Image (cartoon, rainbow over all chains, first blue to last red; front, side, top):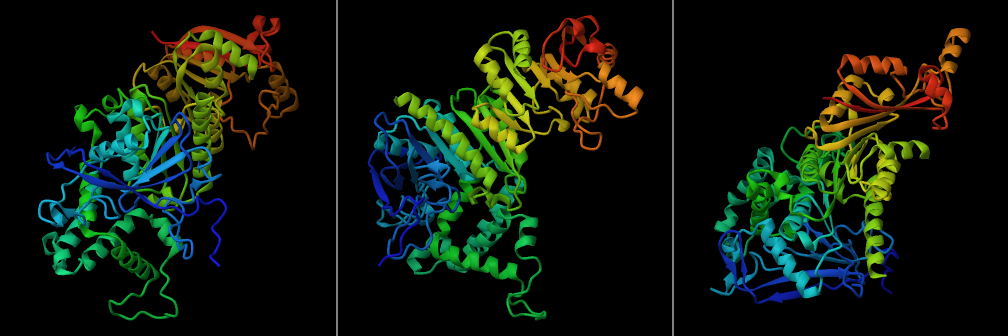
Length: 388
Length: 197
């Protein structure tokens, strides 16, 4: 007897694959002759195809954003399941929700682990570095394939928020609402510095083999684990870590060892996060996506003027930041809001009190979810008014 | 509240760009959007109010007025409005300056501390006034700057702020004869439209 899935879950979902033979020209100058994008959908596309919502994932996310893959062994649901489902803030009774694994990813879409048609070997480090703009263009192709001319909303947190922003700039008439959560208009030197240390951890792992580790039957475990541990620190906040771990020693321990074994709770937590990540993520993809982050800068195409970048946009924006997020702090979100106001765009901005740092965007904080729920209820009203 | 919205609305030209400082639940902006087709934003610090604005489909920017309006460019709005807020902010003078930097015109409304009931309560009873427009006790009031119409007009003169229009109302927001004749004594709520040459 299989365990029953929660009633507010989208339930059992099966990822789908879209194959594209039309070449995709990338910002780096190279072209992907053909590629695949793996994606999931929840809810039903309405008759005039106006209720589609795109969810964009962040660095380590993928297309499995809600629901379960295995009914007999449900395990953990998708990465934003607390927000997507019948009756949840992104209500699948109202919206047709789409989420895809981005190009360069390692969860089924074409990326470094895919076979390069030119030499029949995995791309590895030869996979082109894709940008947020490339992603948006590839997502637009997927939208075409699904028959979605205009998204009711594009929603994303962190790097996903950057995609939600880029969508409005690249395809002004294809987005009605853009929800930009815990994002930044571009990375700061400090952000890039953290990414660089993460990359060096991977690049300097002896098992990295210049990115061709697949051929050697190894993975740069230590490097990727270190990269994830470092990243994880930036996703939490000082106060959040203090509340969660304090200076507690591991269970059963009373005294210091005076050596370098894991002693503090926070150490075992980070090591666990690092190890678990290695088992589910590819190092080349990690390298690639940190570069995608570093390169994101929509203002660069508009004389460094972010508000000029927003001039052509038509979407309504909801920008959300979290007080204890220091990776993409509220000041960064306010830069986005300021540019939108200067451009005369429709925008609301919510700064949510939270002690959980950057990771808050994945948590069901009541005020945060109420803001999303209220905003999307209005989007749904617009959709239904049109359809009626 | 409704009559105050109507009176403010009469001062706003259609399709104007408006910034509402301390917009509360967004009622004014929703009203102006409907009756004057304005566009713009409300600034609000309270989370519950912000949520109500989002529910009403009003653009709201979560912000602390005390931190100033540095995010907004000079003359980027036709009107900057502050209803029943000026008496509750710390940086009164700075905010007035900011208001008239960001907006071509400013509209403020506030409770008149010179209203005769206030005067009597403090003069005869020796107690801080509690009236319909100032309903709080001294220890729980959000109103930290209490002032009269004359106080405000003196400040405007000193700061070279032009008073373009003034309406004085009773506590039910009605423009009665009394407040019109003796505004600082019989007026309970004041509405000002301000500019700076």
